[in-house]
Amino acid sequence: MTEKSANHLGKFNLGQIVLHQRHQYRGAVYDVDPQFMLPEEWYEKVATTRPDKNQPWYKVLVDGGESEAYVAEQHLIALPDGDPIEHPALEDIFSGFEPGRYHPRHVMN
Picture (cartoon, rainbow, N blue to C red):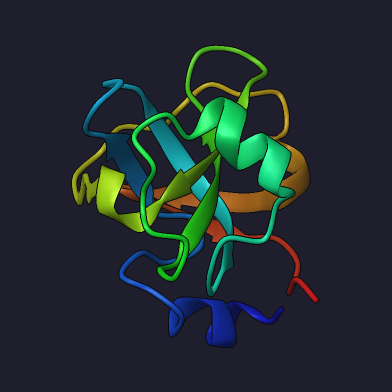
């Protein structure tokens, strides 16, 4: 998926700093699916609030460790002036930072 098409799939852009409203962690969006794309078993086990599968789902680098998350759009809010996050994959995915947003290093397919 290209950055441009990913930016038009949902509410949040690639590189944007977001907050998970329920679990209160910050992260950076690095990919987006137009709807839920993981196996049903994952949804049953992990998505305990049963968010709608027919909304954008985001891949997020979680601040302060090596974790990643797959999150329904309804659970995220933007942090437009958000500070940078700490994650070992940042340099592989992003090339720079400005308040609230990282710049994708590569166009994703």
